Each structure stands twice: as C-alpha cells, then as structure tokens.
Image (cartoon, rainbow, N blue to C red):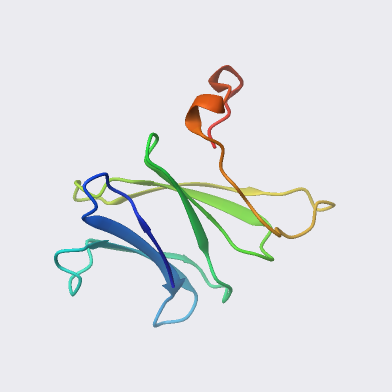
Length: 118
C-alpha cells in the first residue's frame, strides 16, 4: 500500500493498494477513525502497485503504476458525502511504452493558459 496525506490539517489520508476482491482500490481514511473508511473506489483489475501524486492546490490525485500505460486522475472531496469524482484516463502513446517514473511540477510553474494541470 502507498498512502498520502490529502488535507492541510493532516487528518485525512488516501491509500492505494490491492483490493480484497482482486484488482486495485483507492481508500480515503480519517486518521482519527481508521477502522471506518470515509470512501472506497475500485480503480481497475490490474495487480501492480499504484503510486499516488497529490496536488493540494487543485485537490486532484494522480494515480500511475510502473509498467502501466495509463494515468488516472481523481478529484477528492473528503468533506462531501460523495468523496470521489473520477476523471478520465489518459493513455500514453503506444511508442512511448510503459511508465518508468512520473513527477509533478509545482503549481506556480504550470502554464494554465495552455491547460497544464500537473
């Protein structure tokens, strides 16, 4: 499992890992009540490790896996009853091959006029 803090008050975290029913899932947990998850979302049926990259400014969680050819994004709203707003999946070009690594730029270095978001 990989986990990331997703709130500035450090009470909410998101965990990515294998689901009990197979595949991969995303779980949002309140650190004060870890026995009862705030939300759960089945990502896919693959078996590799998901690596999360979270943007505090946009509240978007980017999920990628080493060896995958897809990058997913999920808007997280831990204060809402509907925790997840699942976005589109982006596939890389077939010649690019599987992902070996991903990094995120600081938000102020992005060119929002050209729709750069991560």
